Structure formats: structure tokens, C-alpha cells
Image (cartoon, rainbow, N blue to C red; front, side, top):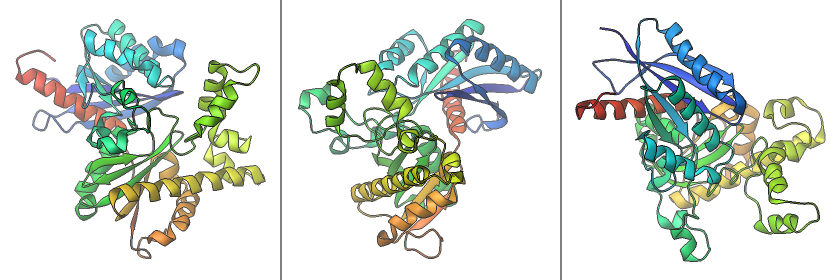
Length: 368
């Protein structure tokens, strides 16, 4: 009997992470990673990416049967509180949410359609970053705006949910006592956010309505006084498009430093602007940790993850120094709050959710 495999697509703003997973007949809901790769993601290259990914899967697992493709989709709105099989209705709903995540959602849509064109019979699934945060209460999700706007979808959604779901599962497996308590997870990469977990469920997060909110990122601004936007939009020569481009592509660490949005480059620079950008970044992260700890009613552990969180010890140490008053110390044994560094794996979550959907579909008598 041939090996069953599935392919995962995790699109970012400039790259796509691919994963190939084997599905064990004995434990079908625990797919095993066979291979991974990252490819550049120019918008006009998605059809080639899809075709190359399908060929890559065949080359990495000769003779295997490809049963599904799972996709990370940033925004699921209120409709998707879990993963979903992709059909015409699902695709239309994902497309309708594109204005809420203009940097990521269109890329997911292009990839899904490219796979449909290259392999029309292949089952596809969507795993939503917003779904993990659907456990938050209305008080955490509301803005202080007219109530009718909340009903129209203007609310805190939160993102990086696949990463937080993975970290929550790893905490339950490796640190069950910590997992049962009050944990803030800092997902720090080119995109960055923080999430407060209470017994493994999301209770608060730094990102809100869009992926611009919260802490500064590589090129995104983070939380911003809306008065700044009103001021900018009233200036001669400014447009919604130019302000949007600035907020997504020219702000964050790049805007703060005028040098680079890459924390590695800033750490290697002697320029005072680089030091100032990193100082601002770490202070804002610490402020978010303290704010989310208020929602949780305290703090038992702080987890750093993603590229910067896992690899930049100077960033971690600076954040912990800001939080010393809260019992946080960079040395695990020195503070009252446990400090952990954990690798995240969004592709594993995509694969697990795809397997669950395929298994459910098969048990109901339909083909995957």
C-alpha cells in the first residue's frame, strides 16, 4: 500500500514555507515531517511555486500518494473558528476577508487557485491564524467604538494563531504545570505579536483588527495613535495607498532605524539609530507582556519563539530586564516567572488540521 503524504503551504509576505508530511495509517492525526523548504514568493510566480511544490513532493516521496494540500490563511474572520476544507463557498469567504489582511490573504488565495489549476482533483484545506483567538471574551475583543461596528466585524481578531496553537500543545507535552497556568508567548519574527494563554487557551493578544497592530515589526508600525493617520491623510500629496504602503513596508524597525528591518543587521550595527530601534522594540514588547499579564491576572511563564525570539538572546535579555519588577529574569532559575525559548512549527499545525479534516471526510464516506 503506497505511503500517503500531504503538502503544506505557509505563505508570508515575501516567501512561502513548504512542508511534506507522511500520514501514518496507525496514527493518522499525527503526521510526520519528511521534508521542508522555503521559496521566494513573487506574486507573479505562484503558479510556478505550486507546480514546483507538487513536483518537489513527488521527488521527495517517490511512489507516495499525495492526498491533500493544507494552507495557512491569515484571516478567518468570525466565520472560521477552526480549519476548513476548501470548496467554492470557503474560497469566496476567504476572498471576502482579503481587505482585512492585504499583505497576506491575496497570496494565500493565489496559491490555493494555483494548486487547483495544477491538481484539480487534490483536496485542499485552510488553517486560519485568527481561529485560535476565538476563545477570547467580548471585553477583550471590543474596541471603544459604536457597538454597531463590532457587529459589522470591527474587532480584535489576533493573528499568529497557528504558532500559538503549536506552542500551547508543546507546553502541555513538555511542561504541563506551566501549561495549566498563565503564560505569555512572544512570537517575534519579521511579523511579531504576543498572546496570553490561560490553561492553553487564548485570552488576549497584541494584534487586533489587522496585522499592523501591537509591537513594531520588521517593516510594520505596530500600535499607532489613530490621530497620526488622520493627520497624515490630511497632508497634501498623501493618499490612502501611500499611507498604507508606509505602514506596512516603511515603518517598524526599518522606519525607526532608517537602516534595516532585520534585527540581525541592527544588532551588528554601531549606528545609534540601530540601538535606538532595538531599544524601542524591546520596551514595547515588555509593555505588551505586562498588559497581557493584567488580562491573565498574573504571569507564571514567558515564552519566546519565532526567528528573533528563538535566536536573539540580546532581545530576550532586554525584555526580561524591563520586566524584572514582575519577577522575570533571563536566567531561568533567577526569577519567579519561568522564561522559556521554544521552537514553533506552523507547518506541523497545518498538517495536523488537514489530517483531521481528511480523516473526518473519509469516515463520512467521501473521498479525500
